[in-house]
Length: 79
Image 1 (tube, rainbow, N blue to C red):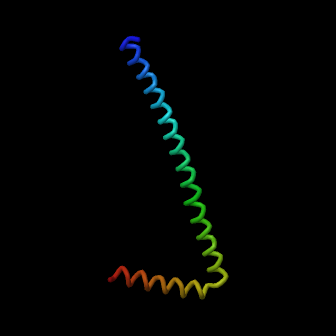
Image 2: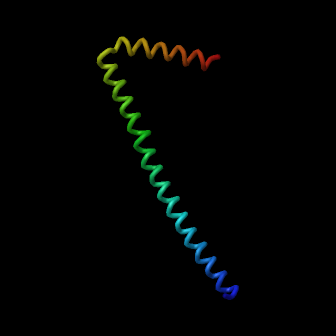
């Protein structure tokens, strides 16, 4: 087997591996975007929905919690 044929075989194999790696990377990127949009956006909507419902049911408790959190955050930001 000549050197030119071996080089062509290596180049062909290398190109195939590169295509496979690019395909896997593209698939992984799509999966990450799908998971990111679902697992980050959906729970945030759920949490805000639950807090909104709780605030409608018990506005006095939410007012106390909001005031307390505001005091703690303001204290930490000041100091």
